Amino acid sequence: MCGIVGYVGSSEAAPILLDGLSKLEYRGYDSAGIAVFDGENIKIEKTPGRLNALVEMTHDGKLLPGHMGIGHTRWATHGKATVENAHPHYNPSMTIAVVHNGIIENYMELRAKMERKGFAFRSETDTEVVAMMLDYYNTGDPVETIIKVMHRVEGSYALGIMFKELPGKMFAARKNSPLIVGKGTDGNYIASDVPAILKYTRDVYYIKDEEIAEITEDGISFFNIDAEEIEEELHTIEWDTNSADKGGYEFYMMKEMMEQPEVIRNTLNPHIVKGDIVFDELKISDEDLRGISRIHIAACGSAYHAGITGKYVIEGMARIPVEVDLASEFRYRNPILDKNAVLICVSQSGETADTLEAMRVASRAGVPTWSIVNAQGSTMTRESDVTIYTNAGPEISVATTKAYSAQIAVFYLLAMKFADAKGLLSAEDKKSYIDDLKRLPEQVEMLLNNKERIQKFANRYVSARDVFFIGRGLDYAIALEASLKLKEISYLHAEAYAAGELKHGTISLIENNTLVTALVTQDELYDKMISNVVEVKSRGAFVMAVTSVGHTDIEEHADYVLYVPETNKYFTNSLAIIPLQLFAYYVSAGKGYDVDHPRNLAKSVTVE
Ligand code: M6R
Picture 1 (cartoon, rainbow, N blue to C red):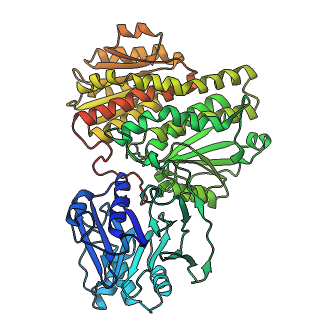
Picture 2 (cartoon, rainbow, N blue to C red; picture 1 turned 60 degrees about the vertical axis):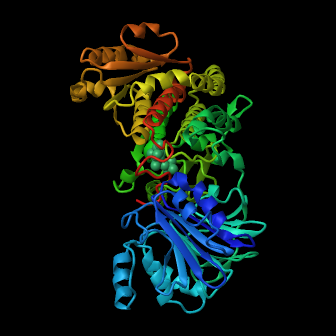
Picture 3 (cartoon, helix red, strand yellow; picture 1 turned 90 degrees about the horizontal axis):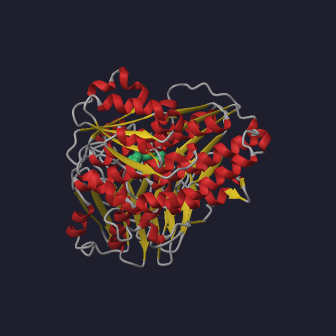
C-alpha cells in the first residue's frame, strides 16, 4: 500500500525522502513523488513506475534543493498510475502540498463542492480534494485549518502537509491509517512505517487517530481534534538497522526465509522459562484461562492460514473449540460472540484494515481481544487488550515467510499454555514438547541448507500451468499456505484442497503431468493420504510428497519425495512449509520475476 515519508531539518530533504521511500518499496506501489520547499516555493516531481525513475528525474534529489519535504509511493486505488494521480497533490496556486495514505470515502461529494467553489482538479484521486479543502478552509492557523478538513472528510487518512506560508513547519494528521513521527538529531521525520526512517532515528511517536502533529527542525507538538496541545509518549524502536537491508541476498524473501531459525528461536525463547510456558503479557490466571469457552481467530491471507494451524493445535492439545474466520468475513457476518470467548487477531503489520475492524467488532461486543503482531507499536497492538509479539523483525518481502513461521510458533505455545492450565498436559508431554520446540530452529536450518535441491526441482516447473496442494488436518493448513505462496509470487494457478475433498470435484482437474504436492506428515492420516496420492497418480498426476523422515515407503507411490525431520505431530507445519516456501521462491525467481514485489500486491493492506 502507499508509503509516506517527510523530513524537516538541517540536511537536504530530497535525498532523505528518496532513501526513505526506497525502504517503503516493499509495501507495493506504482508511482512515486516528492515535494520540497526551497525557502520560497514548493517544487514537486512525480512519476509513474518505479522509484528509480524519480531518482533519475531529480538527479538523486539534487534538482530539488531545500530542507523540508514530503514524499509518497502510491498504490493506485482512485485512478490509474499516472503522473497526475501520483502524490504529492497540491492546490491551484501550489502553496499547499499533501501526501495521503488511506481512502477519503466521501471525496466525490467533497470534490463536487470544491468544483462549485471554482477549484479545478487535475487528478482522479480522492486525495486531491484534501489539498483543495486545505486551501478553501485556510484560516491562517494551520492546525485549525487541518481540523476543519478533518471534520469534513470521511474514511481513513494519514496525511503529510506543507504550507508555503509556513517555512520550516511540516504537519501530519491521521485517522485509521498508520503514521509515526521520528525525532532525529539533525531534524525530524514523519513516516507511514518504521523502516523509512530507521536509518536516521529509532525514537518515534505514534500519532493516534484524529490527532495532528506540527513538526519543525527542533520541535514536535501534538494536538487533538479540539486543537488542544497534548503530550505523546516517545518510544524506542528495538529493531536492528541491518534487518531492513538485503544482507547480500538477491531478494528480501530469501534473506527472510534464511532468518527463520533465528526468528523461531526469538519467538519461542521468551515464553519457555524453566520448563514452563510463560505468557506474562496475557495478565490472566490459569483459572481465567480455564474459563475461556471458545477462541475466535480472525486474520487475512497467510496470517489466516497461521490461524488454521492454531485451530488444529489448540483444539488438539487443549480441547477448546476454535473458530477461524477471514477477518473480512468476520466483520460483516454478525458473529455470535460469547463473553467467555476471546478473539485472537493475527497480523504481521498490525495495520490490516479488515483485521483491525474484526477486532473492533469483538471489542464492541465486550469480548477480550488478543493480537499476535509483528510490527511494534502498530495500531493493532494499541487497540487490543493483549499483544503477543512475534519477534521476527521487519519483514520487507510482500510474501510473508518469517512472520508466518513466528505466528505458528506462538500458536504452539498458546496451545500448550491452555492445555497446561486445563491439566491436559502431563509433565512428561510438556517436557517432550518443549524439547521438540527447542529443536525446531536447527531442523528448519537443515531444511534451508538443502535449498539447491528444491531449486533444481522448481526449475522444472517454471512453465507449469496448474499446481495442486493436498493434505489433511494440519497438512491441509500447510497446503493452503504453500498454495498462496506459489500463486502470489509466481503467478501460477495453484489450489489447495483438503485431500478428502478431491473426489467431490477437484480430481477432474488432474491431467497428465499436473503437479500435485501431497503433504503427508500426520501419522494417523498417513494411509488415507497414500490413498489420495494413488488416486491422483492414476489420473496422470506427477506427485511430489512432503513427509517425515523414515516414511520411505511413500517412494513407491510418489514421483519425488521431500523429507522433513521428525518432530511432534503438532509442530510439523514449521518444517513442512520450508521446502514449499523455497519452491515458490525458485519458481518466481526462475521466471525472472521481482520476487519481493509481486504485481498488484501490497505488503500492508490498510484499506478494505
Ligand atoms: O500484515 P498482515 O499479516 O495482517 O497481512 C495479512 C495478509 O495481507 C498477508 O499475510 C498476505 O496474504 C501476504 N502477502 C501473504 O504472503
